Length: 137
Length: 151
Image 1 (cartoon, rainbow over the protein chains, first blue to last red):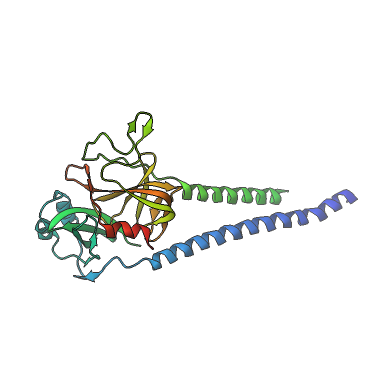
Image 2 (spheres, rainbow over the protein chains, first blue to last red):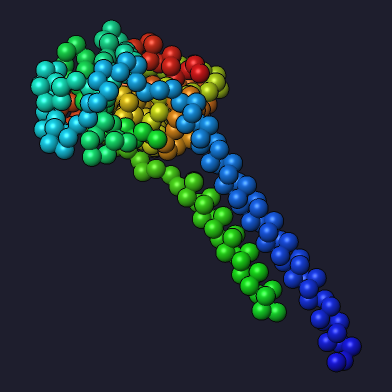
């Protein structure tokens, strides 16, 4: 072996070590930021208030058929049109006032085929106003 | 040499992944366009001469003086009419809230209590969905507007 190759052989591990250090550092940074993000998300989720105000019927779910029927009902229809199909909701949400002087009631129905998705129905003055799909985490 | 090439490659891949993650976090949601039921000429976004109308009938302007505007409930923030935002939420079905005048807003899916942005003058409007798919300007409740301004 010439002294040149010896030198290179000596230098190489040091260089490798440096790269390894940079890589592990970067990976650590990546996992740290990922973990931080996840924790932040978890915190936001736990800090979130519960959607339900009063549980009405703990077993209530909405079947595919009920959902399709519900979606055919036009807005401004009487509240009973919805309740004839969906019966009792899983829970009601806090009453809110969106329009001045009109209190809005909201009822939530988990979907039987996708329990993490809830159908939220809004009523004003015994009138059906609209629906939304809420994803529960 | 092979090993150092691999590590370099790994650094590149890790860097690429990080950049992709950052890009994914910052992608802007699609803008929202609605058909307003009331067909007034003098509406937000229209012009008088060479000037853009920043508020019209049905809008409520609040002198916030740079104070923050917050999410009153979980929901989605989308750009609307170039200078405004649309807030919609499945928790408050059939309603859409238009917020104009917010500087550098945080768009996308946001949780209740999160800051939307700060505004010198907030121009607020509330819309309710009509059976024909149009949106009617309505008079919002004071209590509702307050929820945007308090934590």
